[in-house]
Length: 437
Ligand code: AVJ
Ligand code: FE
Picture 1 (cartoon, rainbow, N blue to C red):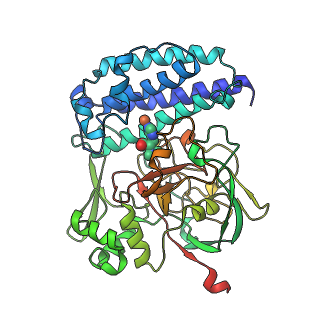
Picture 2: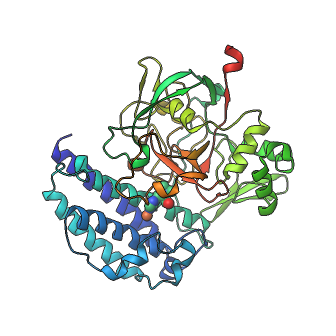
Picture 3: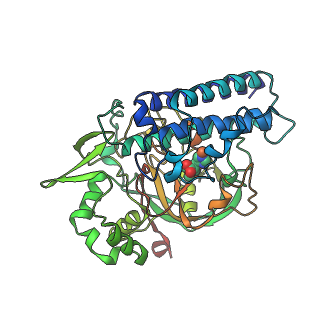
């Protein structure tokens, strides 16, 4: 990519992120922006100024060497100084000031971009710092969409449904992924974040994985079969959590006689059986898999299913190859405010035949969030390193709510196994060794 192309790409990604931020914070009134809709989430006005503050910190100060614009506000927007539940009590910038701060930072960043070279320092190499900031803002766009989903009140967001799948009706329920080594992670993708690095060889035993994410219809069968009331399907920790939290269906589902309804962005409707289920925690996904006689895939299995090309033996950037995601291959970027029916996006299929690995819903894996061998924190420990450990589970593949810039075959997300507010579902797997031995 030439320097001019890279500059244009960066400007486009930053503008796209800001457009979505503007929409998500412009469609509710001032009271809604400053309100805390859930102790799990920041007020929207916090996200608004936090993305600007990170952009100022990394691009204007670190890359550009500029002085802080408002050093006194830095601690307010440092995610590690104040937990989300405390943020409404802080003297946050009011919405108008948060907007003009963001606008001013962005203007200066675009000036800086004009004169930036993309070499000479690790932050500038390949435009990394700019790419990191574009990814950061779209990640917060997803966070803000989660806040919108939690928010009570009249609907303010709407989108057309995703296109119906063309050939979903005759897909095999599962596909085979061969055993053997493959290259996991990356050392070369310029905008990959620290936890995706470095590339390393991982051996995976042969396995089968679901062709699509588990659907609402299949999940309703688990519920109807008493899955929530049978400790056989749950780990000890999962059963304890199911009891304590009173889990009996995905978050946002409700019962209407014999039918299931779900509420999304303020509207209640019948569940769509063919749609991937979401708003289930890791414990629910794990219990469903056991009920189905299967298990969650490991993170390495997920990545091998998504990226490994058995013809060349090489690992792809995306299931379909190296091209950036577009609307024909994946449901990303809040274009539609729901996952597409299972079996959609044949053009986005992986070599193994699995579909919708990228986009639609984040997919829980069985794996803890751990560093790859040779990991080094970059450019700050608080992005990934402080979260490594067994208390977080890895999610893969991105959801309909995240933009392509923060979604690729190597991208890793993580959360606590009890969390359900995120746009997460799952697919199941089983080992093939028994058959081939
Ligand atoms: C990678 C989604 C877990 O939202 O906590 C945003 C992304 N990091 N700002 C989060 C992130 C810093 C992060 N997740
Ligand atoms: Fe952040």
